[in-house]
Amino acid sequence: MKSEKIAPAICFFMFNVYCLMFFFVTLSLCDELTLHSEEKNNRDCFVLRSFFRNFVALNIQTTMKKLIFTLCLVACSMTAAQAQTIDTLLNKVSTQPFTFSAQVPDGNYRVTVTLGNKKKAGQTVVRAESRRHYFDMITTKKGKYETVSFVVNKHNPVIDAKTRVKLKPRETDYKNWDDSLNLSFCGPMPAVQRIQIEPIKNVTTVFLCGNSTVVDQENEPWASWGQMITRWFGEGVVFANYAESGLSCTTFLAQLRLDKILTQLKKDDYVIVEFGHNDEKEKKAGDGAWYSYSRNLKIFADRVKSAGGHIIFCTPTARRAFKDGRNQNTHGDYPEAMKTVARREHVPVIDLTAMSTAFYEALGEEGSKKALVHYPANTFPGQDKALADNTHFNPYGAWQIAKMIVMGLKQMDSPLVRHLRADWQDYNPAQPDDPAQFVWHMSAGSNITKPDGN
Image 1 (cartoon, one colour):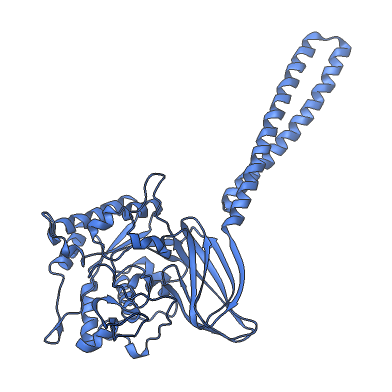
Image 2: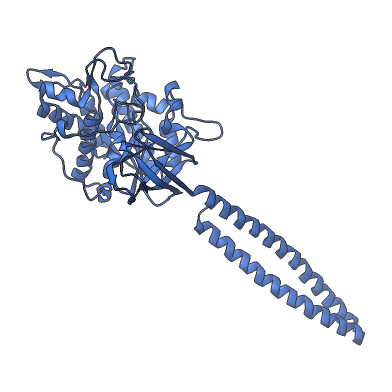
């Protein structure tokens, strides 16, 4: 419990102390007056003062009970406050990635990490949860230290005593959904001296809803924009990623992920929604861009607005599908259907389809492979066949898409951009960063299994 809850309890305690002192003084006077009445043989005065004495004694008992209760409340509050603040002297340096976990309840947490080592120079990359990227490589000289702070959202599947998010079986082991706040440190020589974790309330939470192009991908070489966008924002904004590979609007809602979000959402928080890839594959009666997809997008808008939040739509990222030197639209009417719902419901929209198409075409038919999971055989352990995926991004591609999201927020003049870090530089998808200059230090663990969806 935070200090704003402890302070009133202490004030209440002090008030009762003063009341108790007043009652004791009053009781003493009653005793004096009662003795005087007995000496004067004044029966009426004696009865009245005896009654008053008993009344004061009863108030003393009541006040004592309040004092004991308040003392217990203050003690429990202080214990809870201490329990939620974690301060660990780790003093670890390694040539391999390593992790740190602390069990915490749902919420947002400020994490302060002191990087460096007394005996060795360090080169440390800082990430959290499922490879959520916060800081590029930070170099520290031997015996020198640098402190960084950032805010991490932690959530588990519990909605209430009877209801949980219907996670996919493979998600049950994901760091994003467990009961701990997870930190990971990688780079040539990760060095961490100290880790401090404390709950924080006064930040804007941005909840992410989507599929494999949004989710915090658990393993290398897969990556999505949701786990990269955290790199560009300061401590005033925190991202909570509820996306999962293979989901459509329909399945996201059916798995109660939006229900869980609404238990955490505060007034003026944000929800960003990107769907389309998997909605296209739903072929039952009533499905389609202008039917179930549009209806479901309206459900997102209505429920988020009713809860006091702000909603933003993102049209789906383009697939790599070149013909005659141009990247083709594989999403049919879905991007336009989203824009139509956005206009009707007064929801701002980021045209990620157009921006990612311009991005692919700027890189070219062959060069655009460098943004996706295209790797020759034996690039990763256990990979005996080449990987050629035209939907799912590698870290470079996810990095570029995250920049497109930021630019979309800037173009709509979103208040979120006030929290961009000082080193942000505006981005043009038609002039992307050079893939050859992009540096990514791998986290521990790789898995060549393709994410659900396409």
